[in-house]
Image 1 (cartoon, rainbow, N blue to C red):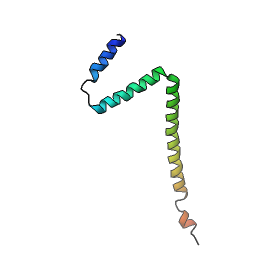
Image 2: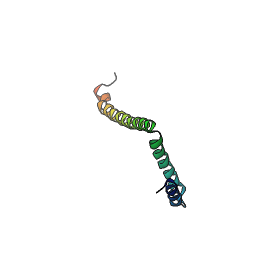
Image 3: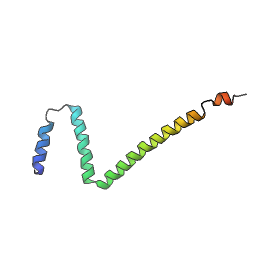
Image 4: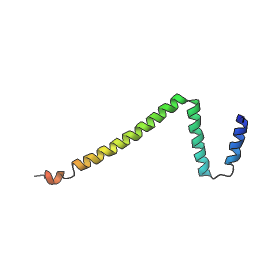
Amino acid sequence: MTAQNYQQLIIEGIKGLPPDVLAEIANFVYFIRKRAMQPQDFEEELHNALLNVELKQLSHQEEEHLEKEFEDYERLYPRE
């Protein structure tokens, strides 16, 4: 199948879809295009996104740890 055939198939396939679905398709197309045309940039963005998710998870775990650590602080160390 040629590139033109694929393009026509895609155009026909999206006709009549609601705007929210078209937005999702546009996001996917951008993702695929970025991965194909700028693989190094794509890998860097993916790495940064995964790192941010991991850091947020660590922050949440640290917050939970601190809350447990100081759970009885007022009772154990009352202000005089």
